[in-house]
Image (cartoon, helix red, strand yellow):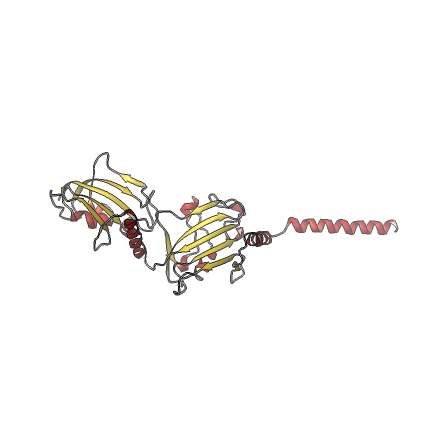
Length: 303
């Protein structure tokens, strides 16, 4: 082999090595994520996982325990979400224990920003796609590549370029108040409590029937002692170290509807459905769609 041929061969080999190196260096994030997800599916024997219908890059499987109809975009969906790392198995995000998430299925493409400690809205259409394959009460598991999730910047506790394992658990209720009523009844049964259900849907237990002045209406200023809890027993507010006075119209709807039914001196416990409390927005330590559990003592009233 002459020098020219040797040089040509060397140049060709060098070019091949450089081309291969560049190809590997510039491999797309889509290819990298897809390979990682396929490996995860194989390693965990997730044989029911299928690519999404539009082949955008995520995989999912659904479990529908009922014979009802599939969700439509116009339907309300009440649900919880868990988000885990595919790499480490760490849980990054979890819906609030004492509440639940809820929206219309057609709007189920944004992510709950408060959990991410950010004001940015993240668009994740995979959630809606999976929900449309569910019946109320069904569960979807979604393997989401990083480029369809939070990308190279990450978000909150989620690092850069992280592939995620989502669980979307829906509940078999078309209205939040129906779901709340079941939650309250289950809580009462589990604690061996007997309560009266008011027409307002607030449940109450009378411990002491007061014989003092009556409350004339929601314009009255009532002085009370109270403790507010979530259903897991977490205390979110209390006035047991003193008293609290307010015009009833300044308080949550559940109090406006129930407190005027009792006289001064009454001690009672109430369970307030979320729509008569802080609703979908929550407040401070109170998550969205949370049922509230109050002990209340009426000390005095100014009508």
